[in-house]
Image (cartoon, rainbow, N blue to C red; front, side, top):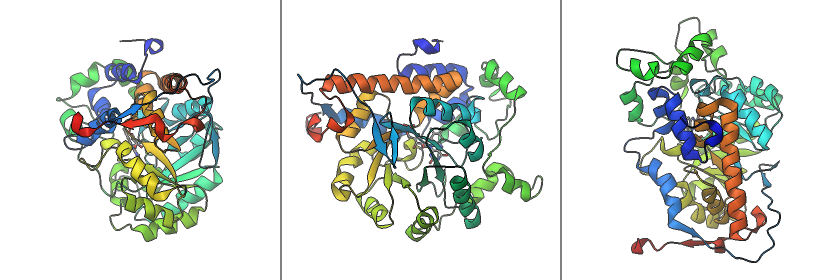
Length: 388
Ligand code: FNR
């Protein structure tokens, strides 16, 4: 197993995560829906765009600072929301948020987190966004909004592609359950990860910390946490509810899960600050396009009325540089930092951020740019698909 400091790229961190985690947990992070076509396409689609450098510019200083959602960040990428981080390392969301703050970027905390939004707010002073769902219980949804305001969250991010869970077959194949359950079929995959197992036994602090009070109020044993959250997903949510939520929040508001021009136009109409072009990392509807392929048409349609955050498939600095040149205001990453978390806790997340940061810095300079603002669409040439 490579030591953390010898992990040179996100692929190395993924391999280290794979050897540290029991198989059910690793494949829960790594997998996607159905045949995983969208999951693969999210990264492969970046290869359809080539970078076109201009040389002999002064690149003695390269500035990565970026403004998004009213926050000045030192990096052009943020951290996407991911649920149940305690499954991957005991540093869980606290470690992720501290690593993000130390790197000068924004962390998005999931509704499905294993740390409460208040504890994450208290742990670090970096900018934070809360990822929310419009739940059947609108009072609980409103309660989240109030709690985020009270805890100083900068932005709210509504995920719209998860009215029901995608079909993630690796979870069934590898015996992923929440909370984890060891049985005859998956015993060896847990036993090989003795460090993880020991830690889980010593600190079984696994709970969905943002909703646990609701389940407790229902009475002991009335319902499991996961069943409770699943029962709260509301298939009747429409754009009217989105407008209602934006009004409740009255601050920087992101809609996560946009793929089409028509939805992006609706996002402008309901007053969103930003759209996160995302397909949930290929974990929901298989067969939808990679976010990078949706970027240029959406930018053309909405002009500067929406900030666009490109989320999905990013594994290299060149992916970030391509997205920014094609019109994204910022990018966002999920699995890269989760591989880091599993590989080495907070230090692993910091390593993932550092790897991408240094790649972006080098790529910008090699492209002939001294800042993010200098990236333009003529730094990109689209491969002729018919020739490939
Ligand atoms: C996610 N994602 C996600 N999104 C969300 O809105 N709420 C959530 O709770 C989660 N949980 C979650 C768990 C895990 C294990 C993964 C891998 C992803 C999706 C996430 O925010 C993001 O959209 C994708 O991860 C982006 O794709 P990449 O960067 O992983 O390729």
